[in-house]
Length: 320
Image 1: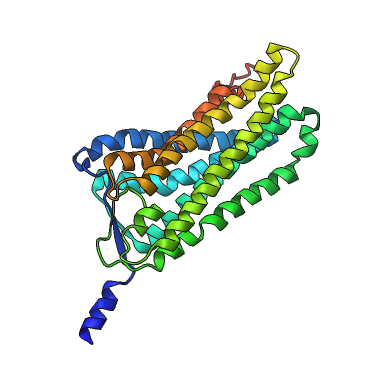
Image 2: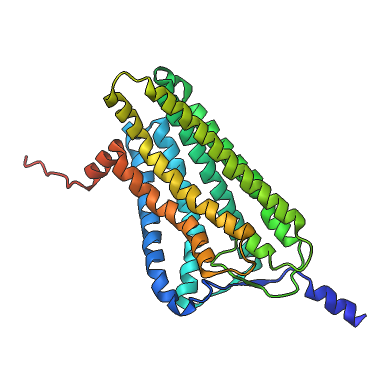
């Protein structure tokens, strides 16, 4: 009877997990934290400024910038969900995280990553309509339509990932409670389980394929139609002008899906033990887009650049 009780207690969901940080580089955590802290500063400041500009400047109240505001908000939440705990690990060795905090972090990171993919799809639709059907741009992408697209992005992101914490919660954890990452990634937590994880593996893989392959295929199709339309433009200047409106979006796509695909491949098919390269790549997947997206749009988008310079320019005092 005592044996049965002990066995049952050993298979419960743990009250606390431990985040290992970056394997093999614990002694260098302080130095590694410096670029992480800098990117966190860029993410919070850059996205905060973009949201402020789009909110306060009437000339930016257009579908393209509404979608950019959605992207900035998602990037901001992603940064705030992951970076503070990472820095606490690097600076103070605060590796412990309660199971509730771990599951909450898991949901926010996966849900808002899915939302970011959805926003990138919406932005591809915006560029498609603007270039392929410019005369009806304002009548197609009305504020109501943009709001509905935003709501659909949120519902899809939450709907696809809300079961991740529940799936992880139902498993038995009878061995180590140390997650070999700097944040609670779903599959990294599942790999600690001592029972069958087939359902978790299949569902996580299906979501990754749906979001990754499905969204990228839709974006690729949209840009295929854009290029097809641009070929028939009457002058090279017109083609260059249309192409310049897509440059920032293409850069953001590469920042998000590049590290994302590599991270998923290494997570699903890499060695069972986490290496420093695998963990660093997973971190870059969360760090790069939020830090670099506002910089790209600030540099490449004329309206954003003009409003930013206007905000930074000192106001002249009227001598009268």
